[in-house]
Image (tube, rainbow, N blue to C red):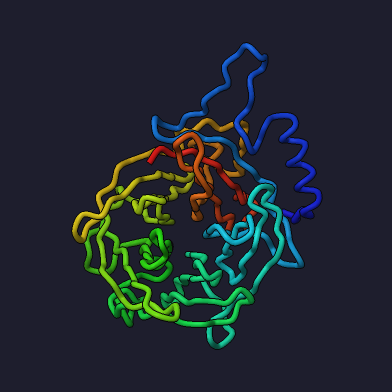
Length: 329
């Protein structure tokens, strides 16, 4: 599919907002009617979606392959592409403001999947390539590289499968504890058990290895993202894909209990209203796609405002789509 220009995409978004309320839930048809609640479940409601960045470019860089989100400074969002680019977006309009190229120590590409913006403004980025977690300056210079347990390294050095390691990354409130979630089990582990590795911040922004937790996924699903809530619990996104059927995307709330994470289902996103969304491939709900990025953007009416983004894999049949959810956690 030929990429559209950002100006065209934003114009389409503006028109769509005026006509149907794309980024916010549709309003009442008349003043006396009650607005629809757009519930996905008793705990989650959909407040809108946007496809404005789908198949667009910014400064010659493709705006897609987005695999992680994090709140950044000055009312912006950081959006990580798994092909070694980090975009800074306007948090309200999602319009790209800047793009920062990333690389490993030898200038090689990353399979970048997880992102945390530290309190000092530096970026912590996980890559599935080794796997690794690196700390970058705001201009993309490597500042540090965190230690990784041998067992979590990709085979044959360790027990992790290729393209199945550090998919999610988050920091607990205060920023002293960093958590990376594996996407799939290690060789030799049960088929539904994945590892969550932690690090503790030391002086000068460095991190040392911390505790490791186990988490049980639903059958056939992997962990595509993990995000801490302001209260220190974890939102966990489980995702799978079945050819000819489409994506499964479920949102869980997880609590630490000893060395395990116990989860509670918040919503299966197939149960959300579609709000007029369309899909370029079979889906149980046309709203669904390959959702990989998630961050908490604020609070509203006692609930968390949560933003999700899908990785389109630079594929014409997939969409770079943002979802805005309101979550009771």
